[in-house]
Length: 359
Ligand code: GLY
Image (tube, rainbow, N blue to C red):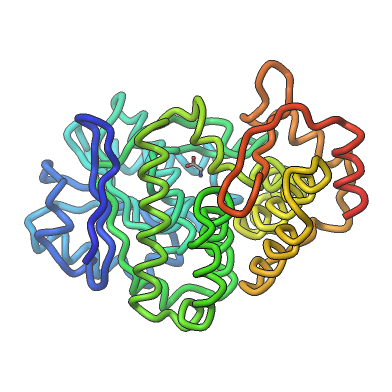
């Protein structure tokens, strides 16, 4: 098992990465001080891991209530969030309770947001079961629900007490979900680590074959980068924004297509290519870098083009309410090479139109 740390003073927390973590009663309850636990999951993960995790928590003497949410991004709403509050209140959970999020990014974001609000804040723990949540959303304390007018518009920065990444979960993950997670993995290579980008290319076979060593190395490198970034900029006043490469375009695709019809990772993949095309047009990267990015994204079965039905207007109407707008200006994370990126707020309307409509 590997262990990393997100360094945030007295709110620092560990990330454990390994196999069979969900069976380890001592490990799984190491950061839970209460006797009562609210386990939050969804209808799909319920059939796969709920019994195992509930038994493990109960073996350690915890009293476990369960809230099962409907599965999918389209349910990441304030209305669904109430199911968690209903369960907590019906089960008479006090401020000393601990919410355990068992599932992918939607479950983690919603359970985390519920933890940030319930009785003004209770402990929570992340047990991410998808690749995307293991490498990105379970680490760093971004919690939220969507609004019909924008993704993740209602939420809070609220850190978990611990993150447990059991790589055995990837064995039951649908292949399109694995690919969606790879979009966020590739993102780290583009914004931060050229060597890692190249490693993802040369280790493609072992990664898609779910080789334990390759997967552990890959997830650990992503979490290491994320932990470093979050430790130095928890509230995204600077460097953390780089983790949003492809997300400004990607969120517009998700919102326009209807939440859930494009997976988040698929939209981010197409968004990263649009960002790289913008970099090329601004002379920040060579065409060879754009080709390398497109090739790696395609290799992991991800889209490199936005939906053909989307034009400039359908992008812009979502992008103007994106959280990355500051003082009325759109801000884009753009690669400046493979392995580095910067924030740009001077991309002109004409250039944007050309990038979107000529893609
Ligand atoms: N998913 C980007 C971040 O956590 O900042």
